[in-house]
Length: 185
Image 1 (spheres, helix red, strand yellow):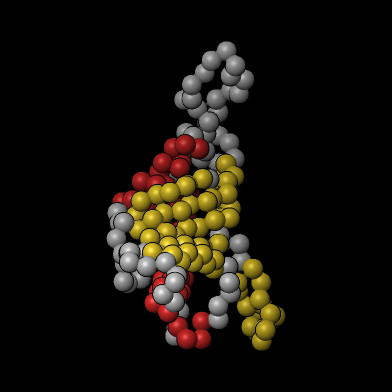
Image 2 (cartoon, helix red, strand yellow):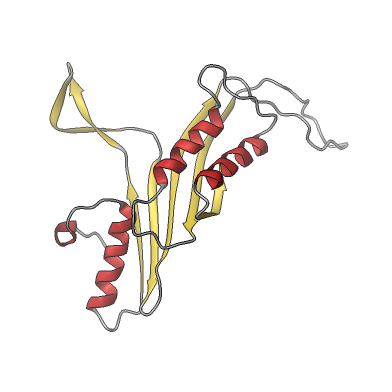
């Protein structure tokens, strides 16, 4: 189903739009007992030629795709989840592969300097029903900060697992109202 948001007013967030869609179907049709809305927000930027924004052409900016999902039963509170997917990240240094369990099948040597390239999928659920701005920008900024470290020197991570843990811990420190679902990097 594709809806044109003419009757929903200004769309502040994709989460609020998904809530509006669920509410519309639940309140408009007595036979509808469950609604699930999934929305993606693709990052498009207007094409520029010689510094002039183009009238009708856009280019996809690969900074990850934001998405949300809202599920609502007729007499229940909505369940809201948000996420970021297809965010490609790379560290040219300051990443290691060390301190892991070794056994007779281990063939890879430890290293303290390697390239780490990853594609992020992060989905979180809101523990509370927010009526205000959703906090996905804070999550996005936290992912980039924890993955990269300070801009002048970065931050060393001995493993992929430590990097993922650092990202999750920073997000939870800044946004304690969320809980994680799948988190892959």
